Amino acid sequence: MPKPAHLIASTVFSMTALAGAVQAQQPGGIEDNMPAFQQALKARLTFPMAWSPQVKDLAAWRAAGRAKVWDATLQAPDRTPFAPQVLAEQDRGAYTARDVAFNLTQDSRVRALMLVPKGAGPFPAVLMLHDHGGKFDIGKEKVVAPMGDAARSALSQAWAAKYFGGRHLGDELARRGYVVLAVDALGWGDRGTLTGDTQQALAANSFNLGTSLAGIHALDDVRAAEFLAAQPQVDKRRVAAFGFSMGAYRAWQVAALSDAVTAVVAANWMATTEGLMVAGNNQLKGSSAWHMLHPGLVRYLDYPDVASLAAPKPALFIAGASDPLFPAASAQTAFNKMAQVWKAWQAPERFETRVLPHGHVFPLEAQEGAFEWLDKQFSAGPANSPAGASHGQTR
Image (cartoon, rainbow, N blue to C red):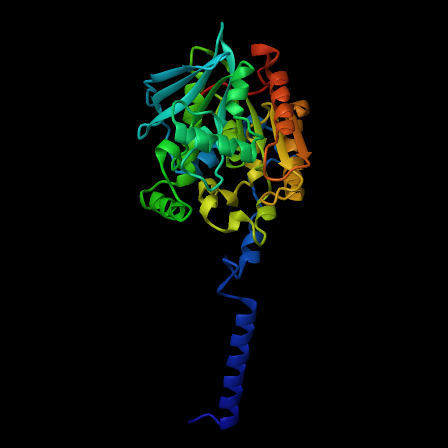
């Protein structure tokens, strides 16, 4: 028996109203390159593996955090012999520059620049990690002056003038008595070159191959740190990771993941996920973000949580008060969170942060302060090893 017309109309109206309500409650589509339901996704990011006052066993917490990060990198442990070879040397006065080749991983044999002070060692050492900057034709030469290449020398000097007050950070540290190692990240210099557009293809194809671009960087940096610490001229108990911008991200990440690193200086890369997920920020544009995004890791740990896995190693974090890429307020929120972890390790004096009156650059004044800080951390020699730190295998 057919339904009366008024019942049919009522049913249609009810279904239409219900559909409208569902549509209102479940927005779809994309807004500003984000899912329209981004707020619901953000609300689920509770970072359950972050340190909290409920953590009683700090060493176990750190081990679990490291394991989670390594899992997200999609990388397997690598113990390939380094098999180093010196290709060329250059006398630079107080130190010698070397063009060296070694097996970074089982898949990559690379060329690197290594600076070795003259005199009796062993010396403290610094792994210098270069930035992104949207410039791929040089990598290691952004932080160490190149050898015998006029074209790269010009590019290198221009980069130093733009971001570092005309100074090559690695060469200055070598003059101060540090062994310095700089290696190209995949896509830069001798290992490239990328372009702004091809970054996303490289990242996608890394996933197609069962790996991750950010994960490759992480493993490469850990292996570089292990290579540096293994050099006969190096005091393995005094090895720092040092970087600016993406190099700073790499520095605190390798300090968190590797026992070969015993201190870290990171300038102009620290913030919270929430603080970076704002309109116009680089982290939302793809491109450079692919080098720093481990699949699914943000479901467990925020950026400051990962960096806190480096505790209680000496750590200096620097931010620019007018840095447009890493808002100072978000950087300070991250710093406050991290400070609690060093305090929990009973080593608050080993953690220092500075918000300085500059933008996304690392000027001479900030450099001098960072160099002096690092000198102070290593001035006591081997006895300055962080209390409670692990010196076993990286994982």
